[in-house]
Amino acid sequence: MANRVVVETGARLHFALLDLTGDLGRIDGSIGVALTRPRLVLRACPGRSLKTNMFPDLAHLALQRLNEHYGLHKGLEIEVLESYPHHVGLGLTTQMLLSTAAAYNALYGCNATVRELARIVGRGGTSGVGVAAFEHGGFIFDGGHTFGPGKQKQGFLPSDRSAAPPPPVLFRSPLPRDWIFDVFVPQSSAGLSGRPELEFFRKNCPIQGRDTCKIAHIVLSCILPAVAERDVETFVKGINLLTTLGFKRKEINRQSKFVKRLIRCFAQAVGGSAAVGMSSFGPAIFVIGRLKSRRLYFSTLTRLAAAEGTAAALVHYEARCRNKGATVTIL
Image (cartoon, rainbow, N blue to C red; front, side):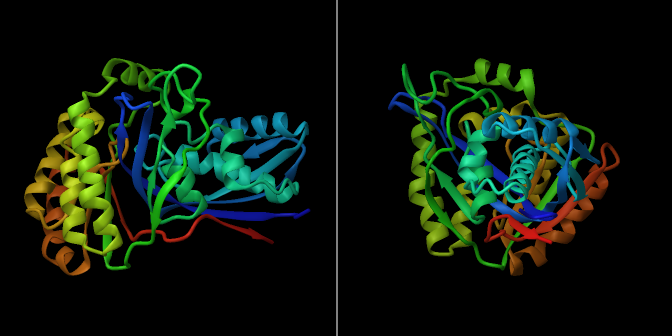
């Protein structure tokens, strides 16, 4: 049994939920990518109860579910050394729950896999991107859940309301180092969580089948081949198309005027040379391009961000694809 561990993982971008129609007996499905920045880093050691300097609700939830599952009465002393904002579309909830679980797993010798830990702490019930990012990193395409009476899911639910297991990963690939991800996080607004997120799913699902068909066409004939062939131009085209369809369009439409204006301004600035969109429920905005193209548009983005930032502060992260999973270091 270890005495102290450090768990280090990255944020993730969630590009879209792919099928919220369910007419073929399956729902969800998602694509996204693990990021090198921002990061979550925590140090943990055994304890009699829970002590943590950040995210106490998440740490308590993970510890409670782990103790119930294993029939133990263990504690953790957690120090979060590096973190990023919660409920902004970068997947902090999943990464914090899994990081706490990974620390518990190492400290108390449970020998569980990442997917087993995800089931215990209740993640992966809708999108599998966050779990797969923690497990292996890279670009991720998951296959969603079976749908209907007696199936994994009987309704359209966010992850924290779903008991479904993490979905299968159908395709995972590293991305080149010269694909650059610029992430801008407005500080004046937050994404959805809890009851409001549940109500949003109920109000906006199912999605019309014609949108789901278009999304499948884009993913299978544009985005996945582009990843396999390292074709950033086609990848950019596909991601830009996704922002106009299905559930993602509804996620963007509910944003503040400031966020929607910033997305439009960024899209005009890059002129199709980069992908511009919003991760998950936002408000985190991403711009994805190749390094040589970024040199042409990045100064314009920073000017726009500074000008628009008078209405709301923006935090900027420059990242690459994190092509590996979380690290657990025993000290």
